[in-house]
Image (cartoon, rainbow, N blue to C red; front, side, top):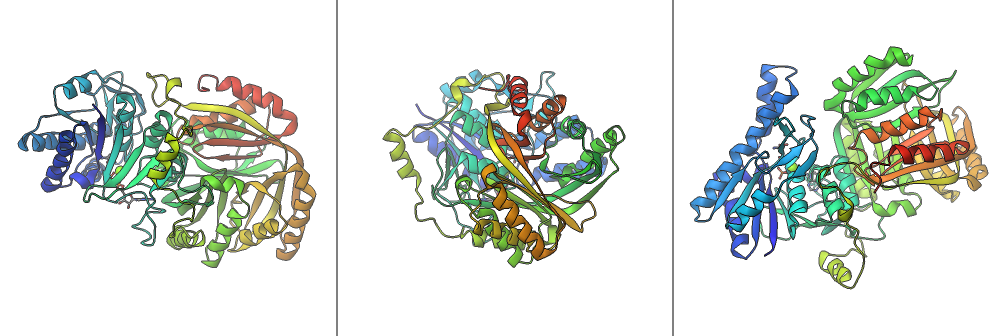
Length: 595
Ligand code: ADP
Ligand code: ASP
Ligand code: MG
């Protein structure tokens, strides 16, 4: 008998009528012959209300007590949903995270799932019950209640679907699917019929709040198809599966994190090991750092900038300040009025001028880009908070995300291709079931024969990045990584990019011409560099990946010249001569996670 996991988010159980509707939905599925597990979130804005209450009691409440408090929201709703099912004449049992054996680690407010015991759920299902499980919560080894992080009920649902071997995981929410960007922010956003795990993971991690990013890690690892759909209508929603909607369009979605913070550590002595100390201090607090840019500075010192969610600013500053003397840096600055606007697409890696197009769109909207980082499937820009909405609109329009790509496929077509033998990669057989959310790496690889070009003294005004990368694109030079830093003073920035070593002369030539046009500082190039890539799933949210990479390279006195991260890869640019040692060390350091 098939098994369905149905997850209902806060708005879908916000009042008595909606709770009854959710109950009816589950009963209908049961009557259609399925075994049904429901995962339910706290009613409406209940979690926000509890957070606010805690804030009135204490400015800095103990993390353990916070989780104890927040978990009550889900306990209320599972009980009410189970009552509603009884009232409608069917059998249901509600269970807390502890009662479904949802074991997590002890990082309160961002706990990771270790294992789930399925016996009790299976027994109850055998007995004809609809099992109503509380989302978002678990217990640690000492039976403390933990929570998985805001939006974490999605992760509970997909994790349950994975361990129970469910045939489907339906996410009922207040939108009728996944859109090319948040439809509340941009009404012209288009609902997509299909999106790939990789794109959804990256979009979720970059701000698309429709799915909790870690739920997509589960889905990808275990090959769980997810159907995101409206709890208020019967229309089909969006399937999140291994395959993308289109094999040609460079960008499939745009996302924004409105509340970011930028931190710059000034004058860090440019020797291996210093950056590692800073990121170890931050990483030990499990704060996910993004957009790391190091400005190769003057007099053997560098400025290092990175972004964190604004809610983590205080904790990040504490971490940085605790090591700043030891590191010998000159100071720390920050800006909490910034937003991150990103575009994501599986096909961008093989196409030229995607970055230039994004930068041009921002320039035409009058938006100045403060920082840039790219990776194989995304381009992120940091902009002033007040520019964020127009920036999002501009890039959405530039990549014509409102219209369906000509080669778009729907779920029916993709399923037919699967049936005709196309492989779908689930990593399930290779995972340990006692460490469900453990870091999963798929490989460590190298790209040799690269060159780095850095342009210093780039004026910090709108349009420069667009001009620069359009000119490079016209010269038909293929660019891999781009980073644009922040110089602490905010007057000029430096931009670095990598190209194939065979392109170094033409790239320098183009850089020189751009320099002359805009009267910038100077061009610096380095022809003997290489890229080491750590590939896997959930690399940004597993905060220790970048830290461990820095640790290993610093331990061998290897300087990381550029770094970028996505959920799928962490890339570090180093001098070619260090390549062999670097790869050996990384393989050894990550051997526990390599599958
Ligand atoms: P739930 O309570 O059901 O988990 P959420 O509020 O967490 O619901 O997620 C649904 C919301 O996600 C939508 O109302 C929408 O505003 C927002 N959202 C952000 N990005 C997207 C996107 N790309 N597609 C659809 N919705 C999005
Ligand atoms: N109730 C929790 C929250 O609001 C979990 C969830 O809804 O997914 O973040
Ligand atoms: Mg949600």
